Image (cartoon, rainbow, N blue to C red; front, side):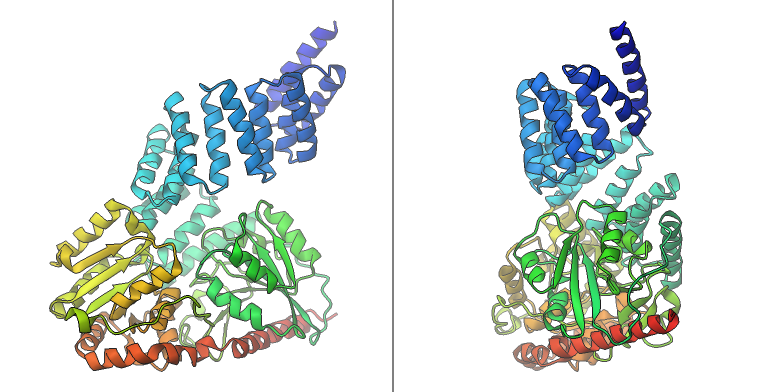
Length: 627
């Protein structure tokens, strides 16, 4: 009779698990496991239910009990691996997966889970090998193909990644994740029209796919069209969708004292490596007046490194947000009583903008990492300056109130391992070399046409492009073809991929005479690095912030004459500077000193400007919310 009852409960459990009714399944499985402590299958299922409910400790206890009953059960080992992966213990997850493979090497799921554990440890080549092993055993395995694409993309093997995502879409044309990933890969290779088509298709299938919508917004900044008004409308749509998913909690218990020391929180996925954000946030963190502000860092960083530790040391408090839900992070920020919360990522990879949608802080600010509005009405302010956002020109394209810092919206920490600029290479080569080390996504066909015209107007000149995506041979072939279509032979265009060591990357500027800034999305870190290496940069000032950063940077050095107002002037400026070899030499010798002495490198003064803005924001909130 007992076995009959147990079988009936197991049928109920199976239906509940298939229907993803985890809580009901868990409660029923607890009864079964209490009745029979030797039922490995029931204990394994109970572990799975606990895991889905994020009850990790209970899941671990059940899984280890099931494994003691049946130590050679691959399913139990894989579930334990999944448990450790969910808890962020990826090395342990890898060990369980490898044990499962030893017992049953023909099971595709074991190799797939191993790939996931390796991918989570950023061991992308090994992960790709594991996914291929899964596909050998199960060729039509969409998840393995999808993650194989991710592992390939992270290695810079973009066209192989594109092929993997395309295979997923052959199996399931409505796979939103595959369309999104394919759009991301196309963005990396500079194929923006294809990227936008994929992302728009994903949103047609799932209009509520806010992560994909955010990626679409990022791509629009580089696209030749639409214009600022249409791009703003798309940002507003995204903000409205997110607001509907994450209604904010409006009340805040922060002490309403306009003059007290403020708690400032900085949220970023980029507190690591040589990310461009680090060379602009570090001077501010280092020079904040601790009598005025207490600094909290919220790091969306799974694998900290030396840069992470350096930035950590510059904060009074440090929180790791990786692996936490938006609600958990928002709760942590509210518990920390943050007064002003600053987003440093916008619509870039790893962003935690949904946390801001929950309004965890009384005052919320966008700055630095993204050259446009967030689209969130609960983002109160955006830090900028009067050149990047001229008064009266760009307010209508922002949900935030623009706060213009008086001496520029950026402060740059020059690299301490940069080689000396050296002499202009034209003196040795006998010809002028232009260069751009920006992301290839910014080098659109329209930019290629203009740069080809510049090369055509300066006889014998050359162009060096350097970008991570140019490591991929098909990407190089595409850009050589684009230039060839404009009459510029491959012998005049050098295409270089990633150089991991920063000193080697910066050393390449010794081969460049003049930098060319892309448009409509200017460079930022690349422009600062070029100037530090003695390379003048010619820019084209556009109608929106993304296309006016070059003007803002050059103006801080007294070089606004290198900023053009239209494409014809851009060509004339670049060609004219190329003919003025004495001016190139003068700039080569003096740019580093000029940058060092400019407001771009005055950390203490910049920190005071930012703190004064924070204080005004806080006083406005206190006045508005006076009790």
